[in-house]
Image 1 (cartoon, helix red, strand yellow):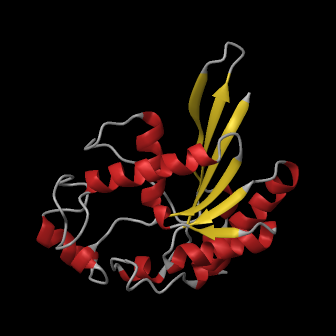
Image 2 (cartoon, one colour; image 1 turned 135 degrees about the vertical axis):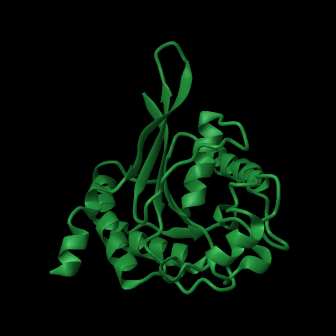
Image 3 (cartoon, helix red, strand yellow; image 1 turned 90 degrees about the vertical axis):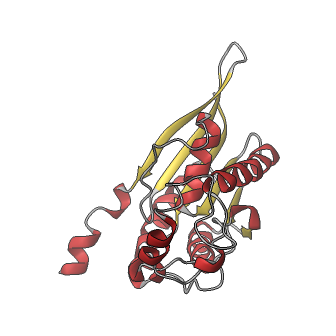
Length: 218
């Protein structure tokens, strides 16, 4: 039997992604037109699912691209959205708004390359972010035990969920691809012996975005 279910939607393509900039809270300018279309597609898919198995809550992180993503989903599902700072992405410090190529060159790689070292003045460390965000995500999971919860999230939040629920050691050299507008689903199973286990039902599902590139080129 499935008890708790967590569904993560990575935000649509944002202008900072197209421009190659670090999109922190100070400089995030929101979704592109393509990003809006991606989330409209995922919202239609989730609305169909919501009619049969309703979600209990919808959460979004505080950055503009997440709030825009959450608003589209909220309207399609007629489900109120809560903005929660616990779902914010990493703190980028002085890197906020700068080109990623410049930041990575100065730091000797991206956040994952030196996981116990800040990648800019005032930034998180990658392992520090995973630990903090994982602890806060666990609080949300505990609060919604036995419910279906939907998240408009950063790609990093999906990685946090995987790290937490798979028990991946901090600093692991492996990672996960998380595409814009993708769906990732975790399910908490309870068997007849009373044993509980988190299972990853799907990761980076973009079936609903099939044909989007061809349509844009037509």
